[in-house]
Length: 145
Image (cartoon, rainbow, N blue to C red; front, side, top):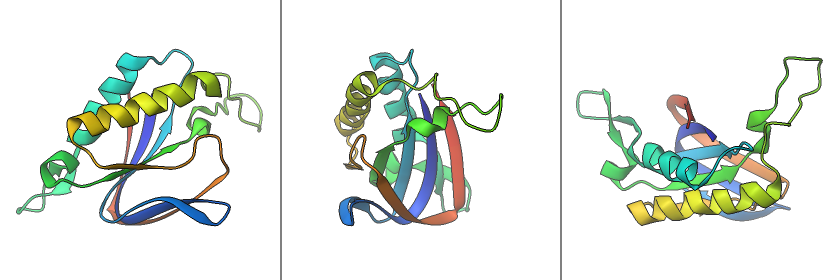
């Protein structure tokens, strides 16, 4: 499982012009699920996201997490994170899990985050989504499980 995590002051995701998920300050998380991911991968990713220390403390060091600050996460499915461009100019998505595998694992990730205490908003799996965000920092990191 791969996630691109952005610290944001606000973020939203829309489908056909309708906002389906939105947060104010927190984390916007684009999640790619690969073929060999499983529930353990989703649980591990949830733990890492919720406790990722990318928010500043009083000394301006990145020492605080969404968990500590009670900040929400906007989690959006993004199979293209597993696009392989090592051959040619068109990405191959062979490593990405098919929808029938990825959708329940994304649901498991969201459920695991909520079980940890997170407020989670989501996009719509499989839809053409428009993501809007205001990056805070900028702070963007990639997490792999």
